[in-house]
Length: 451
Ligand SMILES: [Zn+2]
Image (tube, rainbow, N blue to C red; front, side):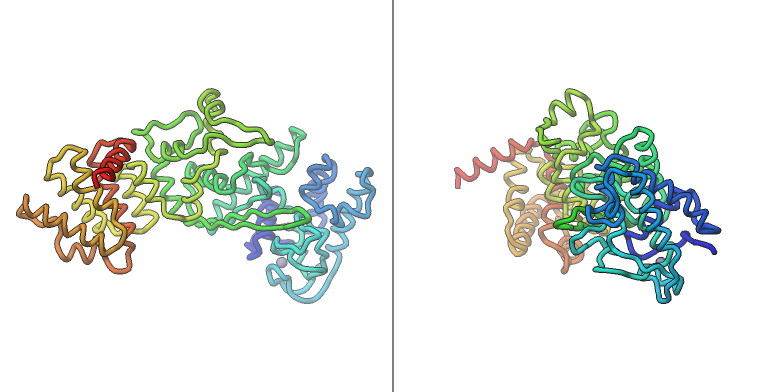
């Protein structure tokens, strides 16, 4: 009899377990059940002969794995667990595996024996069944390996599955290494990310992947394994988001803080990190931890609205505008993430460049050309403001600020957001000036008084 773990399975819980098993055993095919059992025994040893804290993170209080066995008699508990597992292996039911579709020779498994299932009505995929289901031996075994291929994040366990197998292998290698090193250190066996914000955890994972030059779409899952209020969060990351990070953030805060000139994106991330965070109920100040103690890596532990928006796939143009980010960074973002055409960007940039012809000082330039656009509240108003700029420009130049074609095809093409165009134009205009945020605020206040 051969057990084959070499093929991907659609169910994410089974799949993450399968990947963990393959990495744990360093092989994906087994000639006999006996051969597989050695590895399962090793795994169960780490599940049972550990502190109760670890066990309760893996199995529900109501789990058959821990129940019906003396809480204090670990040898008995271990024997029960192995007996359960064997009884499943020895079954031979006809039908189709609920997870991979394999026909016949199936186990009839009870929900509460598996790790990460709860007494509650369960949202954790495979375990989302009330009583018994039919599963093949490979899928059933895989589920027992799922916990060691996840990382603790905040209230749950996080895992990731990509369409790029190399990313899945990287993810599993990393976790199994951490699991094994935890056994040696005699601490909780489950890999711990030490990050309590799901989006930050995802961002930091992307950072690691780009150091390995690994790209692909990835779905991140965060699941709970408590007996009440079970929940799940899902975030899908597109390959383009990883490619953007690859271009703008060559390294994250591992050893030093970025300088604005050298590493604009990382500086933006740094700037938006909140000034304090909580750990074990205590407040930790950014100033003390990051600046004084030079613990730069911990920057990722702080709440960060820029990271949250980026990971959730929301537009971050507003961040660029408020921080007067460079055209270069904006352009990379618009091309990679928004898929914007190069020609369109060039035309908008040209409009901003052309306005330099007026050669005004920064404050006058801002009041005359930038502020009217900034204050625009509708597409009609925006169009009208562009026409006003055009008239002003014609008084100085023989050329047009933009042609009618450029207006229709590139500046405000139908179907594109006028608001986004406005932000892009403003970013290009801000780059022309050397004004501080506060100066702009003051200029705006002055205007209000004069009105
Ligand atoms: Zn199966």
